[in-house]
Image (tube, rainbow, N blue to C red; front, side, top):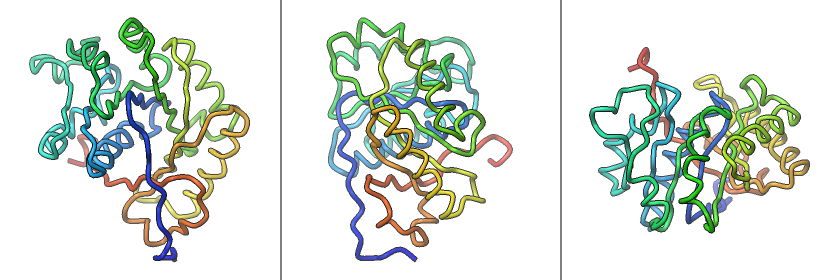
Length: 234
């Protein structure tokens, strides 16, 4: 059981934050929960859905809850909302040039999904970018440091941007255990050591928090409340 007196380190991210990763890493759920977390910290928050590839688990699926919380959600035009086409919201470039306290960009999976970031190169020029690679050690290709490094290289090459930080999202849905969280933490620490990138945070499902020994972690913890469901679970 976790030590109730242990204080979780706060996530200090602000400015332009890009959330990327391979398919199935849980990056969109991470992006959405990060938006809520920073809003609760008192920041002016916007989140933009740049996932133009995956028809499931997109930021737009949580738009009502985000909007009700006072978070600005930047989406494609309504007529394109369900289209799996390369439709980029016109507001994205503008909000990148004039961001709120924190602007979270939810990019698509793998190198294909981040192609849109390269198209926004002019808007990014001269700006500090926090680009975070979300790693789920229970997904193909990211169950080892070598695989994570390969994904990192592919994302950087295609997006024309550098990944600056890492986040562990050990996730087996309802089968996730505390030991799975610990395994993911060990992997992300080793990835940080080999890549020179900082571990910005790890995620823990809110239902697991009471069972996880938080004092094991030297990095902030982002509690995850599941807000995105595939069609077959709705």
